[in-house]
Image (tube, rainbow, N blue to C red; front, top):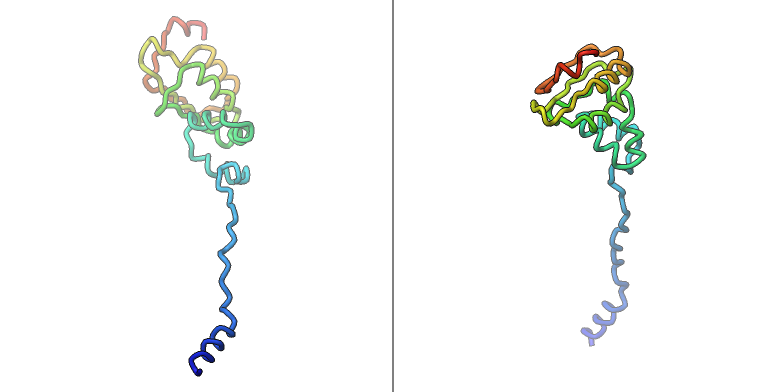
Length: 146
C-alpha cells in the first residue's frame, strides 16, 4: 500500500512548468532596412563603377548614391566603361569632384573618351586637381577644336 500511496503523491505533485520556446522575432537584415546614413557609410568604399550599378537598383539607393561626398574621385581604371556608361557616371560628378582616373580599352574599336565627355568634365567639375588616363585611345583628329 505504501507503493500505491507514493504513486498517488507523485501524481498529485504539480508537474514542473514547461518552458515555452522563445518567441521568434523576425529581424530584417536587408541593406534597405538600414538608415540612409548607415548605407552611405557602407557604400563610400565602393568604386565609381560599382556606385553606378548600385544607383540603378532602386530610387532610394539612387538618391543615396548621388551624395556628392561619394563622387570626389571618379575612378574607372580597374573597370573601364564605354562612353555611354561613362556619361551615366558623369551625372553624379559635381564641383566637388577633384580627381578623375579614367581607364580605357586601348583599342580603337572601344572608345570611352569623347570630346563631349571632356567638355562635360570641364564644365561640371571646374576644380579638378588630377586627371589621369590609363590605356585610353585618343584620336587626335577628334580633338582638334577642343
